[in-house]
Each structure stands twice: as structure tokens, then as C-alpha cells.
Length: 144
Image (cartoon, rainbow, N blue to C red):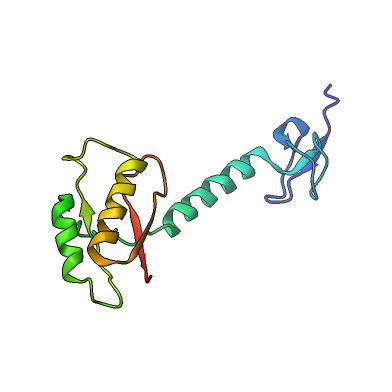
């Protein structure tokens, strides 16, 4: 004779033994931690599988856009390119500067490139390095 009580699953409506129901992992609006769930484990597994399938089906990301990366310029080519635009009120361009020829690196290299741009254009040159693993200089020119 079993003293195990039965409960009705709120999803499928079948009466099942209490060991066929899970328990709340943490307390919240639905119930306290350790309370019996209202849905049997079979229905819960089925619902979780359907939810995952629908989520994967709805995540149709658009294809990634390829961005053309400009060729890296030497510091002297960078200064020459800036000197051509020195009289322009606004300079907007994507330039990459190669640090291969330079013996300094990091912030010192960025400071050196900023000073070269300042001398070539007369504009104040500010930069920011968004992360330590990126070798990009995000630049903006500020009129003096």
C-alpha cells in the first residue's frame, strides 16, 4: 500500500504521483522554494523543448556585413594624407596607421601619431582606445 499522494497536472490534466512533479528551485510569485510545481515533469520537459525550438527558429540573424578595411599607412603616408586635407573645415576618413616601423607602442605611439597629425593639419587630434586588445585608434579632429 502506497501512501504517496497524487496530484493533477495543470497542463495535461492527468493525476500523477507526487514524485512525478518537480519542485521550485527558488522562491517567487509562483511559490516558495521547495514547493511542488503545478506541471508534471513530462509536460515540463515537453514545454522546455518546444520553447527552445521556437527560440532557435525565431533567431534568424541577417547575414553579417563585410566592411572593407583600408590598407595600413606608414606614419609618413598618414601625415601626407592629412596634409592634403589641412584646409578642409571637416575631415572624415578611415585611415589605419601601421606601427611596424615604430619602436614605441601603446599610448606613446598614439601620442606620437596625434602630434604628427597636429603638425600636419594644425587641428587638435584626440583619440581613444576602446579596449586593450584592439589596436585601433578612434579619432576625431577638433578645430583650434
